[in-house]
Image (cartoon, rainbow, N blue to C red; front, side, top):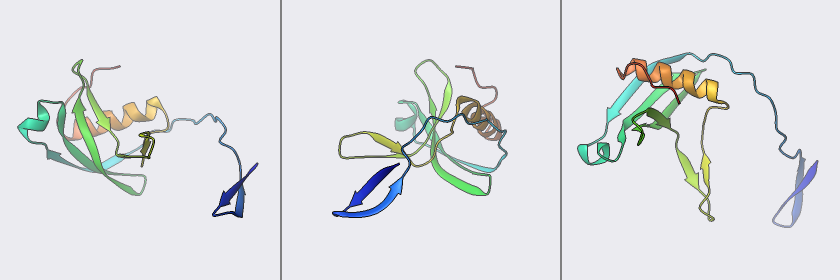
Length: 117
């Protein structure tokens, strides 16, 4: 446990982050909506944005991109801190979940089979 100090006052004790094994479970994606980007963005690999429902949550603002090697990929929204590091608002916990989400979303918007990484 480590103590967290906010504005000079001890607010709470929190556990330090620990690596954990997360068992991937199949997710069910529904109500997928796609908004296509303009041609100026598509030439740089941004095809558009999707929103979808998964596990009782509505996820929105997720970019659909084509990578330099031709794969399709989802890019999750993030904020940048003062040091320039990105902090995603939401993201898959493991690669299997990411592949599952991508497969379902890309099939729903008609991108067909997704090349594997």
